[in-house]
Image 1 (tube, rainbow, N blue to C red):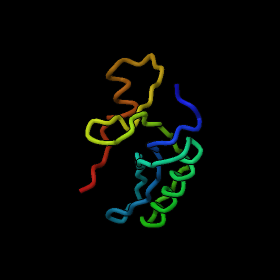
Image 2 (image 1 turned 120 degrees about the vertical axis):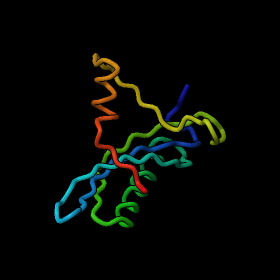
Image 3 (image 1 turned 30 degrees about the horizontal axis):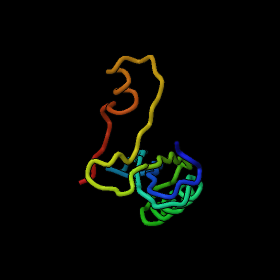
Image 4 (image 1 turned 60 degrees about the vertical axis):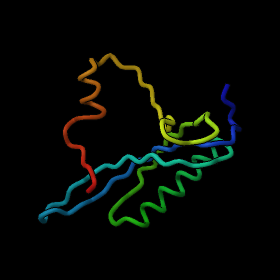
Length: 113
């Protein structure tokens, strides 16, 4: 059973808004990042994630941290290939295709080069 004071690895998903200008047109792009932290507990992991989120914004132009952080505790002692670093479960009446389209693959994802 997970306790609030479990020392170990945590992943934190944070969300950002970028304002990009392409061909004279300003575009809004949202970014979701998942970052690992070694922390004393959930509260510590959240604090570290928010600090890192603000550091990310300082390092990248025209990006704003939206104040959303979702923390996931990794029960394994070591992190490596195949380690689950994030999981989110959501109740939904959507079909498989509708769910994926709404939350994950609506056709406007961007990949960095």
